[in-house]
Length: 191
Image 1 (cartoon, rainbow, N blue to C red):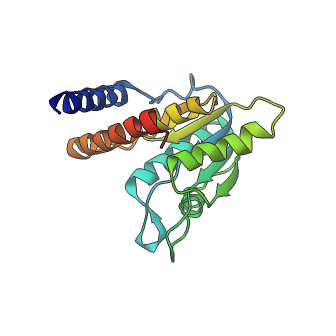
Image 2 (tube, one colour):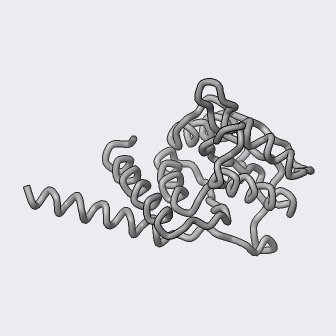
């Protein structure tokens, strides 16, 4: 029994290290490549249809990337809970309130998990396309390792770019631990 706990602990420790050691920040927009599409992974929408602070960070990142001319098309993803705006629509409204210009915005309102969002990217951008498109996923540093691992599972060549939103240390530890568990579940069971 103790061997099982040790194996689980080591696996979770490795996943935590894997997530913590990745860095998807790029604040120097001059060196950032130009992408055909930026896909913003959805996150929580709070009362009054306002994006959560984590989601705002993702939206502000795609806004900055687009305003620097580094992306032509923005794909916003994420469904909704009953009685709420979808995550994608809340993000679109927020982008418009920031004054985004010069980029085409599309919304997808059916997905509710990271896995579904990666499958959506595969279906929309890779299954029916004869041209290779450059795609960057915008999310958070703690979330991108799992999203990009899922992308590799589907043989998708995607890049990641982290939002600039700063979490407090306790929140950062919490989200990394949560993502570590989710990553191990994906590695072992594909979920």
